[in-house]
Length: 512
Image 1: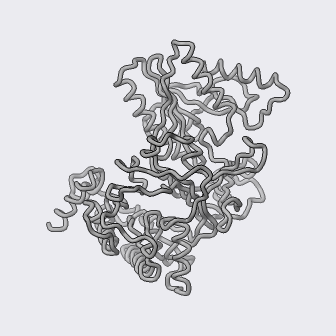
Image 2: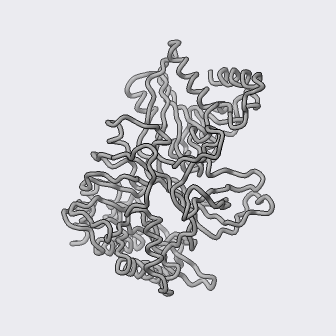
Image 3: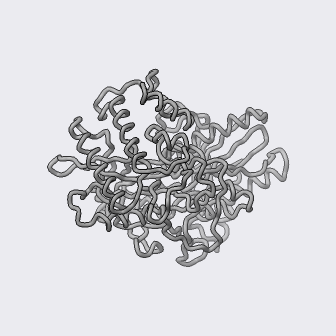
């Protein structure tokens, strides 16, 4: 059926001399079904995969299905019971996560569930899945709606498919061209060149945070396969909740460890045509303030990130409008304008991207206990001065947010990163009932239990204690043999449990 629709679209488009073929595509299936994608590191098997091909491509099923080339997934079941639908959706959730991981230019993901004769199209946004009404393929109306879906995918703008038009792969250069908003005018951009990353989007829901290694220097020749560019910056690309929940007593796990949106919260969407401002929790704003507050303190060089370029991402709409109009990338650009009742459960997110220095490595890259002590000291010295001089509280200390910066002479520094959960206390006082933020294994007990006390710098120092316990148990670096994470030891209960349950475990551990 998909092939038939593709053939009809191609015939009509090629027969129309006035039809614009640039930016249009055919949606074609991969040849193998119920198969493991070629670049998958697990035994998961995808039922059917769809890809995008040029309008003049041969109408044929495609070879070599990989997560890096999948446009959309189809999970199919023979039956149409509630259990069949639940199983199909569960598989679709799992596989969609892999598309985010392997494709650095995906803003959202499409999928299809087919149970018996019933088809549902699904759009995965940052914190929600939006499913279409049932399309019954045994009925003419259902088949008509499915054809409309395939035609829409073939003829719509590329950004409507979930692709980011500000990140494109250049066949000529053999690397990605990444448009980073300029600090003073986000509608303008600086182009960076990238062919490596240090952090990929880890989950199907959340911020979809990616960290790409890049350089401003444009390659003069095509980069050979397998060869890395000489990177000079890290580009952080993520989605952030722009309007904060009205009830801060509930959990707000902005870290990618959070698999779902915060529950039982009411989200307020800005009006159409709004102009975003750098609010008190905007990371770019906080990093600018930190740089100003710590200027002249040479002993803190390379212990915190410095912004080169960055801001809100604007998606170009040239194909849609015929000119160089761009629009700020937000949840509204993905799901449209849901009704007022639906908005209450859908966080309004904005797309942010910025380039920063220096380039660090994971904490597990330390080569000795001595280096670990130096790195942790530097990071906490930076933390102390940021709180003292800038009145900024980090609130998310974890093993992922302290990096190793290795100097040319091989000495190390420690760098504190990721101020997404930080607050500027001079602008925004911590609430008496503060929201829970952070990464579960390293959150303070008061944070985990949602105690009615203000979050302070002591909560972050408590997190440092848990980081030391964590690396002391699982090894200080990648060369240490790791303890089996499924082993029955107390520290394994610091994650994968309810927040209050982890809080109880930590209380028991600290008094034992």
